[in-house]
Structures are given as C-alpha cells and as structure tokens.
Image (cartoon, rainbow, N blue to C red; front, side, top):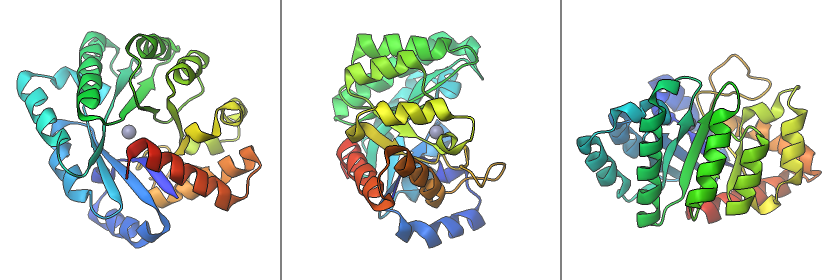
Length: 250
Ligand SMILES: [Zn+2]
C-alpha cells in the first residue's frame, strides 16, 4: 500500500511510534511539509520508504516573502524531496488571501517544473468556486505532472484533470456512506491515474471517523477502491503502488 499524502509532522511522538510500527505494511509514504516552520522536521522524517514534499499550503500563502521563497527553493532541492506542495486554492478557510494563493501557486508550479517534480494540489471551498478556478488554472498552465490531493469529485476539476493527465488521489471520504458520487467518479477515471492517501492526521476513513488518521489506515480506503473497481485487494494495491511510483519517481 502507498499513502501518497500524509502530514507526519503533525503527529505526537507516541503517535509516530505507532506509525513506525506499521510502516512495514506500506510500500511508500509521502509526507508533506506545508509551511516554513515545518520544512526541517518534514525532511528529518523522510527516511527509508518515507519521502518528502515541500510546499506552502494555500492557507499559509500570505506568509510568502522573498525570504520564504528562498527557503522554499533551498529545501525543495533536498535529496528526499519527491514533490512540490501542497499548494492550490482554499476559499473555505482563507478566501481573503486569494491573490496571495495564486502567487504561491504560480511560483510552486514553476519550481516543480524547474526541478522536474510533480505538483500536489489542494482545493477547498463552500460553493465550488475554488474548484472552478483551479480547473481553469490547470487548463491554462498545464503542469507536466500533477496530483489532485483528497480529490472531491468536482465535475470541472475532473474534466480539467483528465485534460492535463492529472493523478486523482482518493482519501478517507471515499469510504463515507453518502459519497456514492465520488465512488462513481473513481469508477470512470483512468485506472493508471488513481492514487490513495490518508491526509494524516485528517480525513480518517470509516471506521475511524472522529479519530486522528494514520498512514496505515490507507488500507480502508484502498479496500473501498478495490470494491468500486471490482478488483481483488492485491490488484488494487499493486495498481496504486505502481501509479504512485510512476507519479513520484521512487
Ligand atoms: Zn495535506
């Protein structure tokens, strides 16, 4: 199993011990450091089959300065870094920083291109406006390699993502009872573009809702995906492991 999106630096030391005890179940984990205060720790956590992504989250986009940009460029070149992000648009928590979010997104897309790394995108809004804006941005900028993290099934984003050959990464919500539309989306997307993730410590799958997530809980999302695709678990596992390997190059 591969968890293509976790924030291990958000975990308490005792939680990390539990995660480490289960790392053998995982082929690889991508841990994302999403603001300047988290980059050092994220790189320190990236050992063995744990790889790092360095980026500035849209809710931290207002922190962008020449110094932060220089630091981002520095850490992004570290040996264990396999992606840039997460970046993107978040009008749910921070609609007031929209223009800073676009600046941070453009900058990180350029950096990913320069370093030949995939770009990890986050998007969230109450009314679908961020998803529509990100779809338009994708069509305009056409990043070479891009993963849509915690893909939520917005139609405009599906269309734009397919157009640019994006990877669609499914998190815990794929297991939620009411999300039949998201499972339908997973069924019609190209199999070679499907990824699974946890977004640890957020978005726990069933039956862990209300608790803090862990990378090895990706099993529950993968089990649901296997059912959706009518594949044996081992085939869904091999498929998503290989897709992640091709996307992130580990
Ligand atoms: Zn995240």
